[in-house]
Length: 315
Image (cartoon, rainbow, N blue to C red; front, side, top):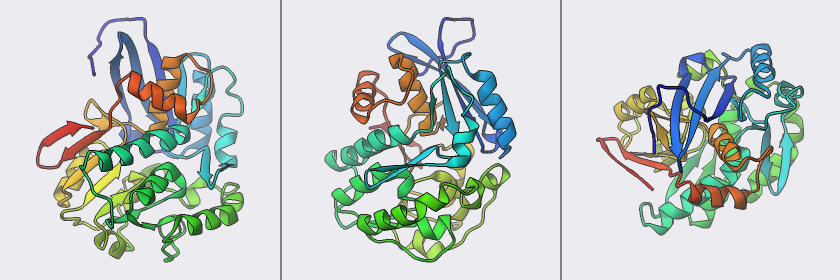
């Protein structure tokens, strides 16, 4: 699925501008059905002005833009909430579609959980799962619950440092309706690691990691707060680099499942893959979940499964 390209070619270019660390920058070339795609990630180390400037400079020059290191939208209970700070970053981007990954999360990640269950890779029935942030990945959250998992949602624990586990989708939805209108108006850095903080470990609330069999959700939350040892655990996430894999292997993690495929040794964020699908389709805006599902099948874009003893496969 991956091809190395060193010569000039007619290709589609997808760039993710991230508020995350520039140390995680990467560039890959991908071949899908005879079409070449260049995928690039540019971190701005939490600098909002730099991110806005890059997005405006790239407008009209690339086929799709990703917005990383923050969300533009979160979904809960059928409602969509817009982060005011993120929306300002793209208010002058007029010609190139900007994707934050939220649309793809609702389709790709739901499909992944259902496939893991259907293919008997993981029997979620009664399995204890810590989902570090459910509002950010409501499709995955719903699929885990539908497949019988005993899910603890850590939105308040890891986002607001309030040791209050949420144990049902209904309660998560209630908190989302209550808090999202306020939180989406605040600076994102108040409750999500940006820039250098993404590479800083700050283990806390470790009991939630240790008492659950599966850790799922945003990798920056997982990496920042996880204990040094997670022997035998399964991680379901994405945006994982080679260095992150080493960290998880040393922690004793048994299995790593990435919702997006591995390209040149790393899995990119859903904003990048959503940009890829929009560019491939020729659309100029976010697509419906059903369209994403069809494109994922058409282009054979697969999630990754890796047992951290070297065995790897796609699902």
